[in-house]
Image: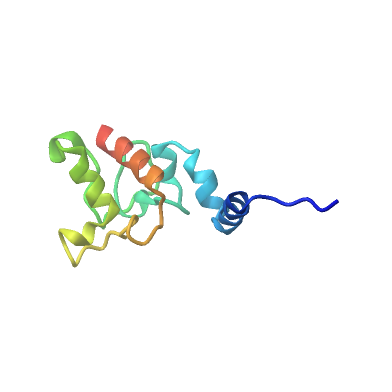
Length: 115
């Protein structure tokens, strides 16, 4: 007896196998964990963040973020693709290049906005 799976199940399985393991695992992480993770957000490479070690100084320190970005959506857009507002930005376009998933960007935005 030959067993078969539905097309939608096959597509779901194929999608899971094609997704990077880091992305799947990263979706379960908190915004702070994603931000500090050297293989994901890696915000500390350029920014000083309270609680982070070996912070960079290319970008501004991430402090008083609610005052700097009262509208959370503006901060999210900046994280998604900073080159929209500043084409010369050194910040990677995490969303446009799919370096982070939409869920991860939401978590990072929530964390950064809380600083």
